[in-house]
Image (cartoon, rainbow, N blue to C red; front, side):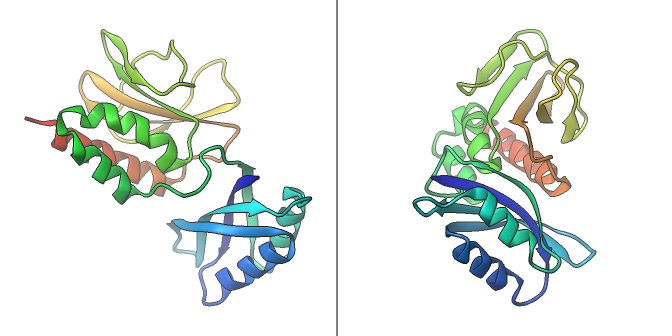
Amino acid sequence: MPYLLRVELPDVPGSLGRLASAIGEAGGDIEAIEIVEKSHHGTAVDDVLLETAPGGMPDSIVSACNALDGVRVIWISRYAAGGNLFLDLEAVEDLTERPDEALTRLVHVLPQTFRADWALRVHRVGGTIAGTESAPEDLPFVEIEGPMRLEVEGDEETLYAGARIDGNEIILMGRRGGPEFLDSELARLGHLVSLATSIARP
């Protein structure tokens, strides 16, 4: 069973090796690792895609990681995409294959790129222009100046992030249950939306 583990650890040599050993001893097999954020306080946040051995439990992996000095598991969940982490460079390559569809393609690559549950492209007047399969149907247009976290009234479970395409269109994405969108992820979202807008421009 594939799981995605988000973990904070000291940004020093050997930390990743100790983390990998702890995961392996707890019955996990690491498939891929991506550095999500590095702080000025000497820590890093990594996303770890792993498979559990037969009979292996994610609770055991969490306990093994948390037992390491300076390591904190932020979040763990089953990872339906499986197989690989989809990186920003791969997203850009996908967008450039069909420049005229870059903004719609962006909607479809964002969930995999950011390990989110869904993404939407929303127009001020026309409503939803494009959305992934599990995206909500009734999210309204909101004024966004830059990439930011958003709150939707009545939904305490989903974490939202959005970015501005132009004065009339925005991109939204959501994660049910977490983890929270980090500042580095918001910056990446803004960058990808800007790139997609430039690619789509005739």
